[in-house]
Length: 287
Image 1 (spheres, rainbow, N blue to C red):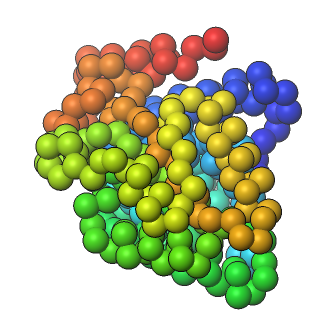
Image 2: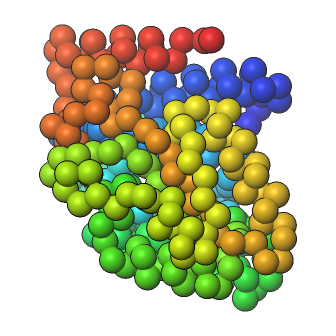
């Protein structure tokens, strides 16, 4: 865990600082590649920052089996994760400037064989929860206390494999497993409610035996409190898996693209680039 600050105010200030920095890299990496999944990367930035700087027990030096695991099932948003891994020392920050270029370790989906700090490769959506369930089940069999966290997209929930994994996790009471749904209401084909609505998400996960919480995915205090409650629950031998349905905004931090399905993929240049950076700075001003 990479938290230096200790008071709630200092922790929040540090998280806001890191989130602004990550968002600027998301914009820059889309420009480097000539295109990028900018909307979904910006929607989950705060979730990733809260996880990596104030929750997950990560270790850049070893790959111990009992380390906390993180699976980015919505791997197309990896431009929000790569800067964090660089900041934590998994690879040099300059590597970010090679994003998707020939010979780069950093592709448009994370590859665990190339990118230090990645616990599983993504690509086709819908696989991550099954992988995370397997990791959590392995921890149970080993008797080790690690936490397994999966980040899902709300559009990704259209995949049937998600619900097979959800059923298994609930039936096996995998209390060390936490799924987070980046509920940004947008997918590549439009708004999720129009493409294939899976609401009510909370009732569906609850029906499979999960503990469900709905939170603001851009509120660091709400995220931290939910992570803390998860830790309290998993101490119980019969704890259920947890899912956080995190309400977010696609393109968060850049007001003129927020909530727009058209900005699921794209890049910003010229005046729009400068407007984007100014918008990010405004969002992360100290309270």
